[in-house]
Length: 119
Image (tube, rainbow, N blue to C red; front, top):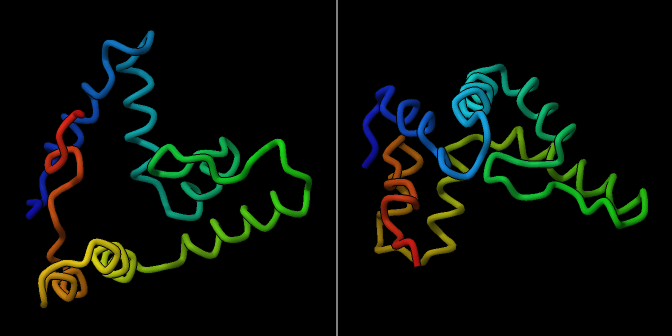
């Protein structure tokens, strides 16, 4: 279970600190962009071709039609409520009975960086 606090922001400020130059500035910008209105955040994701999970939204080597379709799917997916998205993700993991339904009432599982090993 994840508690509502600012500790995620503190952890994110130190994220990948040894991998980049000026990590504090980049991490602060990423954190600030996450606090913006979803329409602004989605637009920024589409402009930089990276979603929240750092996955590419579209493949730049594809022709215009598949790229437009990928962008449209991302835009439509941005309107999906968090509870529905979490419920679907729980369904993909075949959880214990009742566990997936917890996401519909706001109980979310711990983030994957806490539950998965570095291997």
